[in-house]
Image 1 (cartoon, helix red, strand yellow):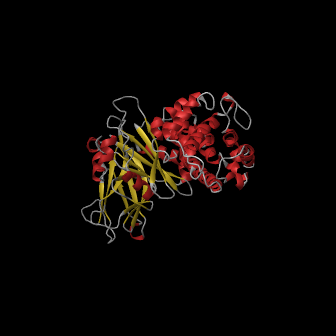
Image 2 (image 1 turned 90 degrees about the vertical axis):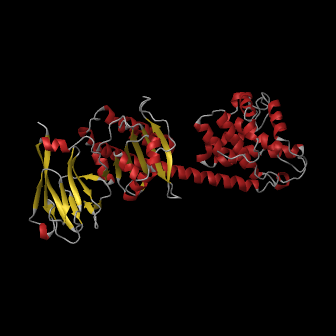
Image 3 (image 1 turned 180 degrees about the vertical axis):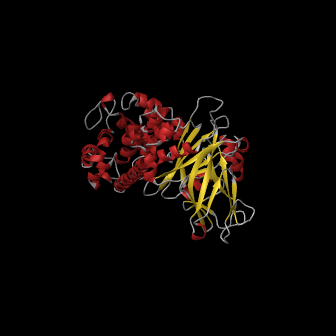
Length: 509
């Protein structure tokens, strides 16, 4: 038999402590004597709120009251919010407790009143530890129990294995979109400097062209996201018409979003960002259980995301320190001002153009600024000499590679970049220094920096010569193909000549 339910409310304040209300259908609350629930108190508006029965269960909506409606101390915003047993509902200064909710047979009039067109706005708020506890019980209540539910636990694997923030977010989002059957997901994190949200990751779901949306210009609603953070609540919107009233139509129309969840990413210490998930008009809307599951997942992964953010901050601080150290070395050599930044920019262009792996690109980003760090051990009389070096002076200058490697050896976290510092003057034909390495025996990251270093050296002015033009320098790089330089890397480099037109103002990416 189809069933509905009854709701029993009991007064909490002294004046209403012996008063109960037994509801089997919707009712209005307020001071007006014609209402089902009359609360004769000046803090209560004449028509304060509505308690309604829907297919989602018992819900409450504030009707623009003067003093607000609260559930368990949280003030309600626009829309309907679910009511659960033992909830404390406060109208102004008058509080009622949900004493019980009982199942009842569903009458025809009730069935007609509860229509499928009734779209509900939901909010869900829980403490971080409560959300983690709910992750263990949600599977029994949701249709996604089993393999799909356990896919969520992969997030723990990602937290343990992934150090890079972008890779961590991508993996978490991919599984979340799949498990919650969203057409798209996005993660935006709070920039600690500006305190603004910044988009960090996007993921699309279904391959079905009828449901897949490829328009990612507006991947999430900033209005909803800001509301989520301001109230520290996870939010569900299922009513496009209501969304239009919130003046976020561009996000909704361009994103073809008909059901939206915006879930707060938070740790016991602070909010770190939001997780956005949406479904299109051809998909069933998200439910409150979906919202609770997404909220539990957010609590599960947020600490890992916070750690990744701290690691990124640490890396950036480290890179800044490296750059400052390299610039300090440059100050001793009055003829190579800006050399470090230019070589780094060129090396990064070449590394990306040659499609080096992420690990190699990271090493080049960190190591190139320090490729000449050994010059700190070269005497000023040689380093700052305004004329061409003698043979003996050149041999001493060559020692900057081994001196630099010795310096880097003292910093364990920099050991991976030693090949750049030591080997960026090796030659493909084996006639370089300091070790006479040849061909692929020269680490590839050093081969990349070798081309970038030579390029900048040729176009830079010296007291004893004028720098070459970019076009002439590229010609010289081509002549060194297979003798001084890696032939494959030279081919890539010469194919990038259009990117070098802005030389020396090449941004480091």
